[in-house]
Amino acid sequence: MQEIKRKHTRLIHLGNIPIGGGAPVSIQSMLSVKTANLENAIKQIQELESVGCDIIRCAVMDLDDAKAIKELKEIAKAPLVADIHFNYRLALAAIENGVDGLRINPGNIGKIEGVKALVAAAGERNIPIRIGVNSGSLPKDLLQKYGVSAKSMVESALRHIRILEELNYYEIKVSVKASSIPLTLESYRLLSNACYYPLHLGVTEAGTVFRGSIKSSIALGILLEEGIGDTIRVSLTDNPVQEVKVAKEILTALGLRKGLNIISCPTCGRTRIDLIKMATEVEKALELYIDYPLTIAIMGCAVNGPGEAKEADFGIAGGIKEGLIFAAGKVLKKVPETSLVTELVTLVKEYISNH
Image (cartoon, rainbow, N blue to C red; front, side, top):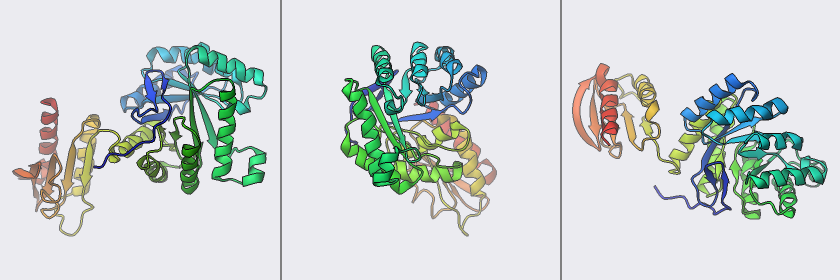
């Protein structure tokens, strides 16, 4: 696979995570529970970390949420980002309680004194600020001038950036999200040429797991392949754990992250085994090994078996109520259909434990 040439952006640090400057693309998700509900928030943080979430954002809507960050930081391994709208005092409270990053638009704060106080507090602890522009909340003057467009999105982002730059603050990350894929692509391309800050990619209001995964995979996949993007979020109307799983698959498919690659044929009239069931069972059985760089092939017949899947590390090729277990294109043994999944999974796990 040809290596993607990524655009070089300014290096910042969010807690222990480097962002930009050629650092690996990080995966972000967001708590779907109230931050001050400590029991549920802690549970969700641990669930997100268990599937490989690098950055966790949480809504800070009141002082209770801001104060909760202190306790959440005691258990969280991933850096926490406080998501705040308008109220800079909540941002200051989040900083006091140890938050690693902020998502707040300085132009929405109002008086410059509030922005200065925010920048001073963030600067003392080297806390990056993410500017987040959404197509559904653009300034009226830009809407009148450009309508909902990439120009209005990027100009809005640059306005916020200039406010921070005028205060000599450069620990910045930027996003310009839309629910439209063409608008998302055009906006990020334009922004990538207009600034050197790291970019957070996402399609806002993408939808359910089915539709949202498709939309996000198209938009994020195209941008990442073009070298644009330093962090990503797959926004889904579902458990945020699903967001992380889809994001990891996007990065793995593009060669931007090493991980388990499970390939399987779409089935046809030649298939004489329950391939759909087998592929699902293998995927579930190897879920805990998702970060291990192996390719596993689940193929329905000899035509799509060791020949077409010869680059796979391990695989199954189905026959009539039986199948072949193969590794690196070489047949290892023939086993009954009922034992194919067990034999393959055992072989893979043994290989991983020995390497």
